[in-house]
Length: 269
Image 1: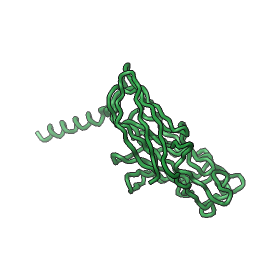
Image 2: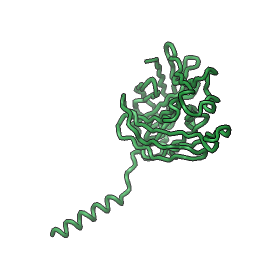
Image 3: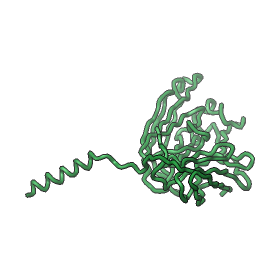
Image 4: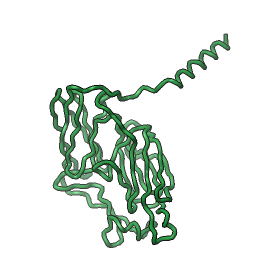
């Protein structure tokens, strides 16, 4: 009897391991879908950019070729405002579990003159990731004038899961050669967390990512506007994430084959 029970348990365990994992999002036709458009504004005084002394970090002459104030400092503007509109915001809807096609081939980041740049979108500071999908970081930096960096400027991408005031390491890997790529799965364990990558060699190199679980998101560029289409009719909580200014929400009802509006206004903390 014991042998029978053990065999039964083993059979069930093997069948469960081999069973496909159900996707949290299913593709289905949305014949009566609507859209949400909006604008992200900024109110009040724009925070001053952060300044970093190049001399305190490696490869100072090479890194000073970009975003320099001409006085030996890297200038990092984390709150990008033009004409009262705010860029680098991810607008997304979480609770849609079925809808238009979602083809996500991972997230790509590259180094460029000691900057992390998010590829494939209107923002170089902010992007999106999908849990368990891949994030790829390509090193394009090399300094032929420096024998130690002629084949590549050493970067050290340090990935963090950010939840409130806490930051937990996801990966911490050297990227010494030009053309080298780090590939890692996105593993985020906390419900409302997001992701950040910072270079341990050059601390002014940072990018941020909002996890998404469906195609109903938009990344806001310099004009501050966004559109999300093909949305099944219904009432949704629409979120707007900025890596420095936080998250805002708006409840929006999307009519069948109609248009809805969601505007956001951020201010300095």
